[in-house]
Image 1 (cartoon, rainbow over the protein chains, first blue to last red):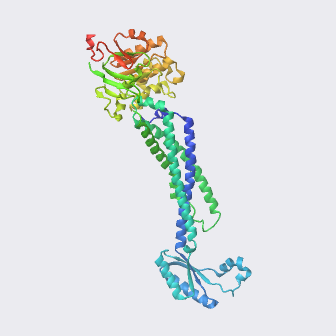
Image 2 (image 1 turned 90 degrees about the horizontal axis):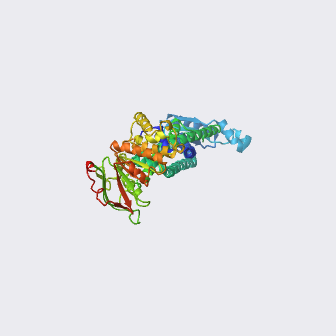
Image 3 (image 1 turned 180 degrees about the horizontal axis):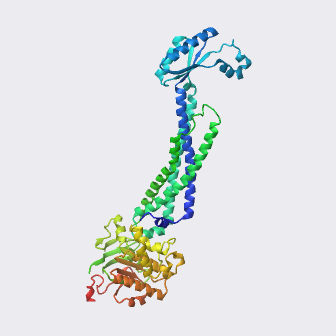
Length: 293
Length: 235
């Protein structure tokens, strides 16, 4: 049958189609949210890896202030001359005192308080050998030096981000499966609803593939229409949540954002689901028709 | 005369029930007109189902257009169905399509380009006298009008075999007469017509019509004419 609006009208069922469109809109709305969660946490994980895996804080633990400052200066010079270190900077002592103020009060600002000198260092990469070389370099300057990898103390956060990502992926897969199941049910219900028309088409010499095409086109079209509604609504919600996250001004959630690639993947959801729906409908209809002469 | 339909010892049963049709053997030549008569439950509709390929026989050979329909794979049946026109007593029109689109359906099924559909459809509408009702949906048409749409749909592809199951059952006598004239004119163009009917008055209206009498699933053929039809000129 030629692909015309007239052949599409063979399966006229406007109420049923409206319902299908809204079911698909809801399914793809939820899938969009799950996908946005998964993709943004993946992006956050990557950003966290970038920021933390290659970042160290080196502490000079010396009780004597003059010795501490001398060691810190030598350490800073050594780090800056290392090819493994991209950037090294001493943490402002005033800033350190302010950080301690909530716990120590005004005493935190006392110059006599034996606080360690701290140097933040960004490495060329966060691999184990590089970290080990920098660790050895720092300890060669003084034995009273401690090297902290940021990745170590943020590992639980990174793990939680991974869990969120896997949960989102599972949700997307579940929604995909549920959508396929809905399509199969819709195709079967459609076959029952349109049994009379299908009998007529068979009698007139329609092939199974012609009849399956009618269903798959209709269901794919309904899925695409519903999907576009769902993806726009889901995208707006994801955008709104992203804007709210941005107002938190937290370094930890700074990476939770969707890039162009991620948005493109989300925009492709309705088309992917329409394709899935077409294939599921075709399979279901052909399977059912194979049992009829 | 080439044969369009050939049945050899055909039997048909549904499930485990007794045979609905038994030992049917007959040959229908191209361009012939046959009335299929018999009491209700005699198996007329079942025989027609075998003819329009809605059923395969339980036994025997059904040969249409020279090919054994029992052996033909399912995937090839649509090609044969397109050579057969079917008219039902209950019309079986697609309810949400207009008369015009119902008539155009076989052409669309056959993949005829849209640009080539309008002309034959308008011709058919004129032939059955429904040009002014072309856009009406079946529910708004009278029984006679619906039957004419069904006939137009059945013949628009110029089928080699036209099978009609009680086509005049739901129309008044005048309309029945008119429908019969449509079948006759089609038969004159070379289409083999098999028409099941209860209306014995119609039998006298078609001089060339031959009678197939079915009773309890068996064909009455005392002279053997159905099994071995005489040449057209010998009648």
